[in-house]
Length: 486
Ligand code: SF4
Image (cartoon, rainbow, N blue to C red):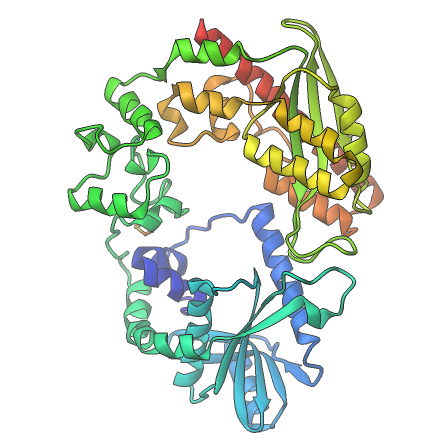
């Protein structure tokens, strides 16, 4: 039986069933490439943090018990700082990223890859509180408890110390401790029981990765989560009336326009369509038409000098151009040289590829406009011409949102969800890189020289293929909408 780790405890606080799945079931939710990248980055940031405490000793023995024994020994040996100090209380285990001894008192520090912001996120304080109480139950009472977060003002090239901001959370942690201690035995008992705790329909089910396949969402066609932008307050009102399905909502009153489309689709058991409006919006497209899609990279540890943590850098684009309706498509693409911030070259090339007139068709204009502004910042001499592209944008997603809904969208207008419904013969499943997050990770790993030259060459082709697939998908969606509008 697994011990109750910090993750199991914190998840168990939200939902005991989820804590049980994590601790006692055989279900393994596979990590995505992006999840793995986040974990690796966290490890790297942890190592950077340790470099700030040169007199520290790492605990890294064979197993949890020997790690705990080693920790006790280091505590009695009077070392200045301990990394990964391990503590076990009954079924619970905690590892302190850094335990620093200052004049005989302990300073507990948890290192996080989140950016420092004015208000520290609740979940980060919860994270620190769990470790603090297990230490306390093991007889170590930290005098001070802090988070080491990523500084927004750091730029690659500065000192490691400048990467971090230390935030003293002692007061906040002390406020939560009592509440946490009261739950230690309950969560340990429920998550380790032979029988799964009865699942309760709660707002966090919405983003729970057990929901659809294993838990309350299994075989449910129209959960209320299909209502776009369903907030927690409204969710509670529905569940108080025992409503968990869209089909149980009697009246459309109180629903937003988008939510009404979902409700009507469920009620009528057929897709919602506003043909006139769809036709009208599609007719606004001016030829030559350019289908455009960008990709970008953003990492906690910046890839290039003078770039800050999580700063977004546009890395590639694909354009399919149609000079006139039913003409043949021309394809243009660009992939940045991953050894440097190549936005200037990308900005120059896109301005030659995208012409000066005609519609620029995108899917989810908010992101594409942000990318164009990002390029304008990196190439200020081209800013005016780049901003002109924004004025030509037509957003296919907006057209869809205003005119069409299919129950298989399940409340989402993401291109990855919409495409297989509108264009069943096309999907992303046969691609090596099949989503934006993976494209981000692959580019970051190329920039960090993770691959051999032949591997890198193959991956560059895959990145181009993925971005090209996005613009092809837009063409197909546009065609499908044209058919629907007739
Ligand atoms: S779907 Fe809901 S009830 Fe089930 S494990 Fe997830 S959060 Fe808990």
